[in-house]
Length: 80
Length: 213
Image 1 (cartoon, rainbow over the protein chains, first blue to last red):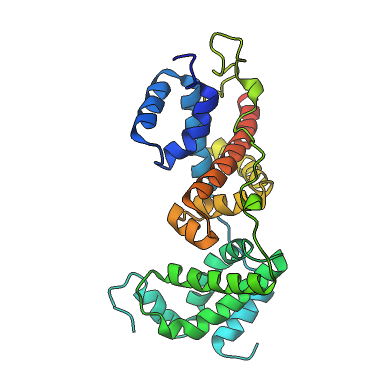
Image 2 (cartoon, rainbow over the protein chains, first blue to last red):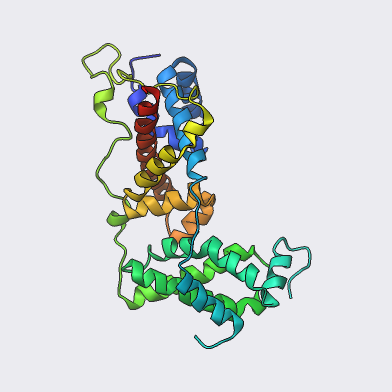
């Protein structure tokens, strides 16, 4: 861990790009070295991953029945 | 007629045969995403809902012409974005880029959680997040956690919410989201980063309260 610009405060701002695989190779390597030594950022990254995983379970589609009925009527070829 | 080996061939066939269950499933799966995407181009949620409904009518009308050059989803959402763009331009709505990328310089985590610059380890965690993996799964995915997540997402600025909804809730790829919302790769990433950072913070708050119970 170094006290330079690669501090946790800045590291967390590039973790999304890391997860998106959008970092250049050298930044990625610096980041991984930082993560290897920094518990706080590792936990933070785990929480980002958890956020994404749990968000995928939020999916709950419901279409109001009156709208569904209009669409089903159109689908049946009835006038709307 | 589409190739029988196309991954959506069975679905398209069912839809062309007026299979109401297949149609209902399709509407259920995409209707909310229709409104989400349309809202990027039009002035209000009510107009976005109209665009969504008009798109379904267009899908019904043009489905016999689907040739299977892309997935059915991509084809459907191309119709949607065209409808939404057309409606938006008739509304003379110009989407200012500044509204898409808010330049508020918001940080992912409040600065007070880091050591200040005068410290030898300035910028490093003063108050790091705590491990949560020892929380039981039923707590992680419990109703309270999911409700907190839902609230956090609902509180996001529209542009961030749209991107996170499509990426993380609906599982779209970055390319798909850029195409549907007319965003550059970079803007898409910035919006996603801000959105996920805020939702993570809300999740951390919720789980912290579970940890200290």
